Image (cartoon, rainbow, N blue to C red; front, side, top):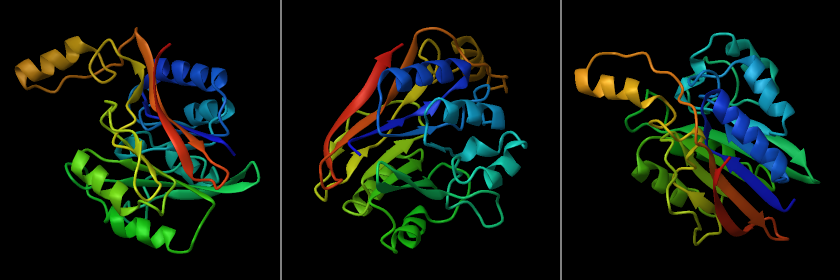
Length: 253
């Protein structure tokens, strides 16, 4: 196990196309993508999840939009943790928020959490992380923190420094310029960005967003097309399975 790839929110068909192409052209040992907007710009379906997994994705994470398509509910229970929903969702929801898989002779845990600031109600992500990570868990721990507020993401990164291999924020669709290795050895970035068209506004058509802002009325949004870009983070691991370097991915496809 030498290299990890984490890709930001995949938005619609254009996001799927460019993410799949990047994964195939840039091999990594373990690949995690956030797929919560990969079906038509909101939510994910079983067909789309299978398409991403068949393309070489090891685990798909999500966030508050994972519930947009009801057909995904039984899939969350049957996919063996290949598609995660946030672990700190209220009790009684289908699926799981973490999974441990073996790859290249090592164990890799992926933990999906959701923030609480400016986000739908959920349990405390900090305490959820404590609960899951308290058992020593895996050789490599990857955390996708799907959250709005940069302060909350940075706080969780610091909180898990030395306990997680990687803490990566998702949700805003805008890649941040703070990829680093924290003092305790955890690779960190506040937001991975998004995969999809950069010609609109965070993946959707500008004209529709403009109308919503100018009128204040609800407007149906559709996925933009053109100027496709892949954003994420590539993490190189040393012999001790700790990050030795990080590199942001921001590639026009």
